[in-house]
Structure formats: structure tokens, C-alpha cells
Image (cartoon, rainbow, N blue to C red; front, side, top):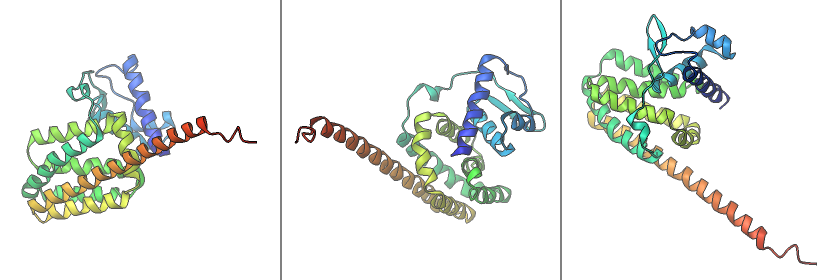
Length: 243
């Protein structure tokens, strides 16, 4: 959680510098090493922040050149309030079909790249980044740009909506091993070129996540009811009148 706070602090700080004009559109951000020294964090933490900024479309990473500030624009997805449940259901629908398509067209190199993300998921600091890369590779393997854009936009909401970040945080942190097992099952189905199994494995993954979100939501609701009940009980209690 400390690493996550550091990474979001850096994202917020860099965005503030962009908005204030310190980093203007088209300008290049300082190199990764300088940013790590500037914020006194590890380079992997800087990489995570850059990925988040890229997902938010605030910067563009140009291989071999650097990270550049993009022109500000408003995403149509940001105009509507989307719940964690709606997002998860949409991801299940889109990414279930993406997995089925990928099972027919994925390359050996892409399968190897997915294997690497599974290995990276075992490390807490890399798990979320590896998770996103896992799903991105599958989308790319469909050879369908529309599918890739859909998956990217859904991930954009996942990484930038405060209410969804909050809803997912506890759920994801408490099921790391299960998340890895589910992603491994998806990989195995795609690797076996089994479209039906790939779709089913992806649906199973998101179905478990939706149920976990409902459990967390119910727990918060019960906690709030108890808090209000305790407050009312204290208000009307006669214990302070008893001699």
C-alpha cells in the first residue's frame, strides 16, 4: 500500500506540473533516473507512474526517445459515472470474446510475453502492472484494433476513476493467489487454442471479481448500519439516568 501511495503521489504531482505549464504539451519529461532521484523512489515506481499517466493519456512513451506530454483532451468515457459493477461486467463481455479470438490468432512470442506477466504477478510491486499487460497482450492478439481500443478504454476507467480504484483496492489485495490462478487458467486455454475454454476462463475470473465486489459492498453497508445503530442507541440509552 505504501508503494501504491508513492506511485499515485507521483502521478498527481506530474499531472499538476503539466496542468500548471511546467511541462507543456509536446515537451519531454526528465529521464526515469532523474525522476527517481527527484521523488526519492525506485525506478520501478517511476515506471508504474508513467504507465498510469500514459493510460490517462497525459503522456506518450516513444521507444528510444522518451516520455512526452500529450495535448489535453476530454475522454467521452469520463463524462459518465460508471460503477465498479458495470465496468467489471463490460470487461467480462469484451475480454471474454477477446480471449476467444486470441486463442485462434495468438503468436508464440505473445504467449511467451503472457508467461512473463504471470511470473511478474507473483511480485506485489509488479502485480497490477503485470495484470494490465496480461489483458493488453490478449487484446492485441485478436488482431482487431476496435477490440484493442475497447480494452484500453475500459482499463483507462479502471485506473483513473477514484470510486473504482477504491472498490477494487481491497478486493485485489486480498486475492493475489487466486488472481494468479485465474490468469494462469486463461493462459492455458489460449495456449491450447481452445476458444470456448478461454472465454469461459475469462468469464469465471470476472464473475469471481463481481461477487467479491458485492461481498465488499455488503460488508461496508453492514458496517455503516451498525455505526448508525450504535449512534442511535447511545442517543436514546437510559444508562446515564440510572442511579
